Length: 302
Ligand code: SF4
Image (tube, rainbow, N blue to C red; front, side):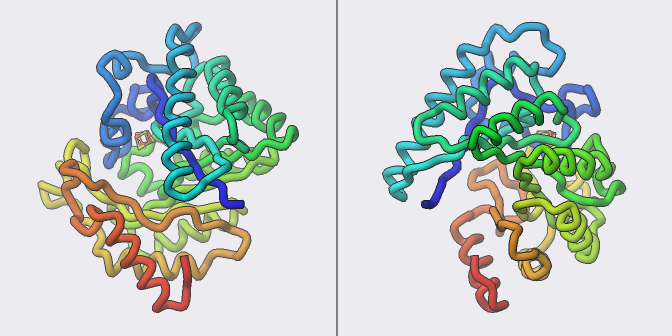
């Protein structure tokens, strides 16, 4: 049976790369409002971190989780006849909060009707042994558990250039620990990062294959207006990747994947006026069709 992901964005979650813990301003392409444009001012004012002694908004967060899940569930059931779901904690770093808060949210998500498990989007430097141990116990009870790590590149010079705030060794360490805990790992890689050649992009693919990840999401770097990258673009210091080069890289990357690695995504973009460049990342429908056509010509299917 096909299982669908319900994306969830919980108020208060942020990132150590935004709040100044490891860096300020976030990754150069990060426009935080573009992740969650509907968050209210009150929600933006409240920010979680693992050291908070109490969380006065937990009840509201739990209600938010339930209502977003129900909304997506209904939509997916109507559109695709979906019956089973994975609750996907998508926006920001969803392990960057007091453990008691995480435990309460994950526990509620595991028990939502028709949810077979959860998928948690985060950064490797926000993971902990305590969180992995809790999730391992859920997996042992038969729940589906995925951790989605934003890896982006295996090159430390690139990670420094995008102000990522951690290196590839940290990513590799936590992917190994996650695998050792018996959990599934999905990694996100971006093609077209500043100063990267195609050879480097494909080397990053090989590096995550070597870590025995279970799934990969690929997308190209696009620029939204209120980011550091937008300034670099306007000043002529950054040129986005062409669609042709992206598709060529994507095809080469897919051909490298062993059959046991699931390909979860091949495109991304933003379909509103926050997109600055490249324009081929605007229309997601067109982008997907172009990618599928190119894959078909290369003898691949998605
Ligand atoms: S890790 Fe994600 S949320 Fe944090 S700064 Fe980078 S893009 Fe933004």
